[in-house]
Length: 242
Image 1 (cartoon, rainbow, N blue to C red):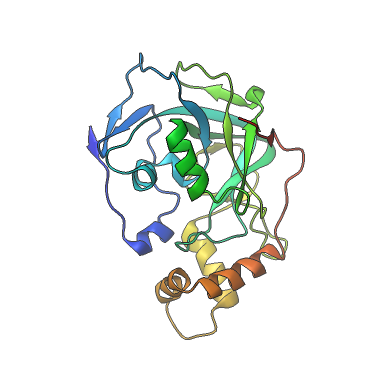
Image 2: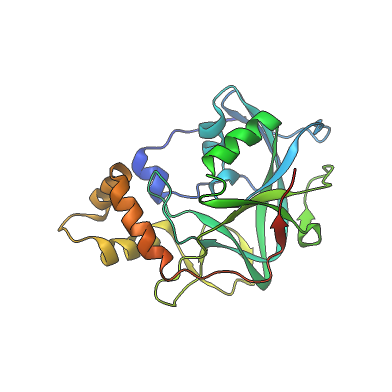
């Protein structure tokens, strides 16, 4: 059992996508437990967690301290997780799965109730920042015995962070085998944005605080990032109907 920590507003950005267990776990009443092998997944919807949704701290933030949900580990084949050409409302550069033959990534599945899924759709800004998709199960290798008949997820609309043709960039915090994209931390990506768009003599941290508080500035930066985004092709998912 482990208590879920709280993050400062700056940590929410620079620590993204946060630490996540590599084993099956249960969130309940603000605590993290090992998941019972006999857990009842009935009426739960399987949603692939690619970025911060892998982490107890983010799930607890989204669903509240009284929420219960199970999370199980999976390996995704022929994909990486990359920084996205966009900014979250709290200032982090989000991420998304991106096809990459030969690369294998370790992620997890959040098993959501219909009510929790509605909350997740809202936090993922479906139709604006992300599309709701269904994964090709042949790409998914389960590491926990759960009844996986369908797997849903979110795919970024904006595409990958391009940085004038240098991207995509994989996430340093996401475990991967045979990674082919260059890897960057959130701080490194934020630093690229800072040097590209900040016109004032302020620190990176002060710039991030300004991004968090100024929606007009965030929108301007996001528009610039979109101008050289890298779009995927031959995706292992399709538009979802649930």
